[in-house]
Image 1 (cartoon, helix red, strand yellow):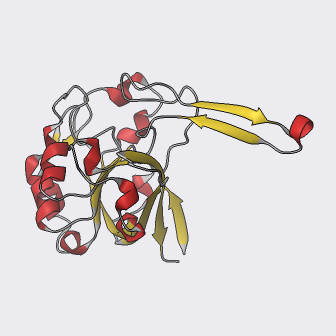
Image 2 (cartoon, one colour):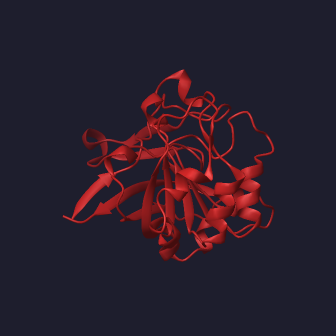
Length: 215
């Protein structure tokens, strides 16, 4: 098998959604003083490559820690959305090109090419977002989750986050944000794992997202 890492590294100074505090990685024990090294991590639940749970948006929504581990692993397909302009919508025609395979997978990932802007101010600019039709398709076909190589499925300036609300309020489970390396996965079905840190009442969590491909 071949493993492709789809995860940005969490580090001080990393790109963050506007208003999010920077993560801190503080060495609290050292080899020289303590005989071992240990690091205190201070970070928010939606830093870097992460998953959103329904509780992120909906009062009383499900949290990540109550979900079975199987919710975070499944078959996946990348939808090629490269070439879209700033602020463009990802229309259902992009998914139609991938059917019938798109109907049957657990996760749909949308490759906009936006991860190439990671580390620059442009990353949190007007990135491409999903259309309502694509969100409804994901719900209708019972996807475990949807993911993008951008900061979200709604525009960065959106305070109401209508697409998040639409997805979660109608039964959607996971939204994976800030993926990378989607261009390396091709057009075939593969296995996706987006395993989050398991902590109590988790509205979201950083993940080590990986694609598992044959051969």
